[in-house]
Image (cartoon, rainbow, N blue to C red; front, side, top):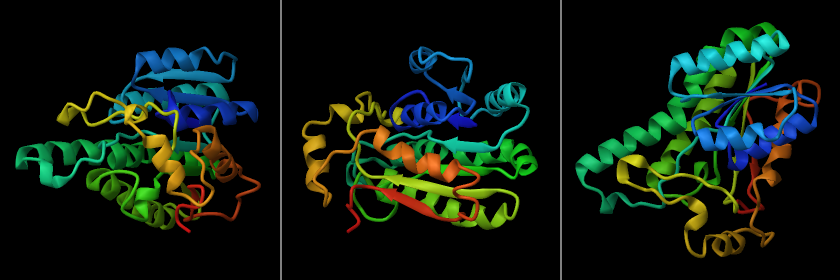
Amino acid sequence: MLVTGGGSGIGQAVCRRYLALGARVTVLERSHEHADALRRLGGDLLRVVVGDAMDGDSLAETLAAARNDGGGLDHLTACVGVFDNYVSVRDLTAAELESAGEEMWRTNVLSSLKAVNVCYEALKAARGSVTLTLSESAYRPRGGGVLYGSSKWALRGVVDHLSADLAPEVRVNGVAPGGTGGTRFGGLRSLGQDSTADRIAGRDERIARSNVLGVTPRPEDHSGAYAYLADPSAARVVTGIVINTDAGSAA
């Protein structure tokens, strides 16, 4: 398995779940700090490559590492993402909007498409699968600002179109987590958003009030959905769908 953005938050929880199930996991992670933390999980089943998911050479290196370890690639999970800290277009200059929009699109949408592009032939050979990471923001205006939400709406369309485009050899699905506590979800560098989502005051309480279960999900709460979609037996006929792990915020 290959995971982009697996060094922290939901991505790391997904890697932990895959490893617990006995899968070989190769991770592409931009942050040296997060990569070191992931390596401390230990074990011969894990490989970590430090690099940018927008860089073709880094993606190719990660794919090569995955194939060298296991001989092939049966699954790709894309967890790379950036948050917008709920910024409104009303508060941005035209120049800020352009740079922030480009950063958001490249990080949240194009990085997933590039990963699929690089990994496609290997996935095709294995009749493998892809899981993309969406958000409750892909369905309703909550869980982020308009830049973040529109990028996740775009990924919802990517799941629909890729599931048809890559059929019948490769299954494509998504997971749409609701608001999640305990993550170090970074903001837009182009706007100087240095703080992470977990530092936004009162966020965990607002999340719990926004869903019918009255809970604040943790990263590991979403990992079971990823494990199911990656399972070639359990999800053999599942493609083009998104599992909402949002504690009922859609209800």
